Image 1 (tube, rainbow, N blue to C red):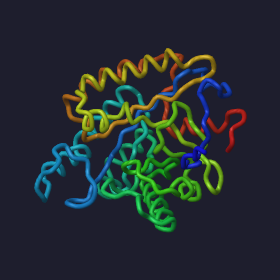
Image 2: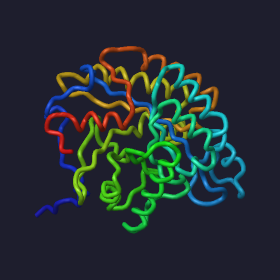
Image 3: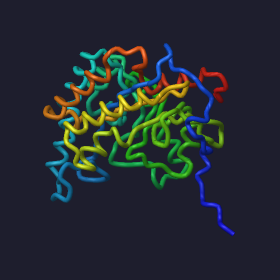
Length: 296
């Protein structure tokens, strides 16, 4: 006898061409969102995104490299988004609300969606009990609400979860999650208190995975964005529309020589097209809930 493999049980298999047909607003074939992470890290402890790993401590090099993202790069990216009249998703560590309150205020004023990204990227949910997770995700939402927006969605630091994280998020009132990258359409996930929507999130069109992880050049990353867009636009048809996400981190893509190439890619994918709905993750989730047969 062959044993059945262990499963997370969060969703069943579904081939994209076998699903019920639907449309995005205006009949668009591609729902496109850009998300930019604004992160804050503890000095000298916990997890960290490093440009040059293995350095001495205190790690001045990587600490100051990351902080450039909040002090300079994020502001330049906000300008770039404004030039393109783009309302983005901001993956926000709630610690940024205290560390750089004027930056969070600027995101609010520009109409960007604030998405909960934990308190700090120096820590994750891994190893927490349900009670600890509930207190943590609730405190993150409360701090962000005081900064101007109650988050609709969750993107976990380092995409780290426990076996019960989706359950806890649903119970704490979160409407969608970005941690899972298994599909090009939203997917309803099973939780112990009812369905939670997973909105597509790319680990490929992602500057951290590509530029830091795989050492892809800024020019190649821009080409990846354009190629992903053109291929998704070409293949999303017959009532099976898709979601394309572009995932950015201020301290990575916001370096001027990289922003030059990002500008080129945004010029291409954000040009007006009837087949493209340029939007935010929370708006994708809200629209998906209105479709015939929606679970919630």
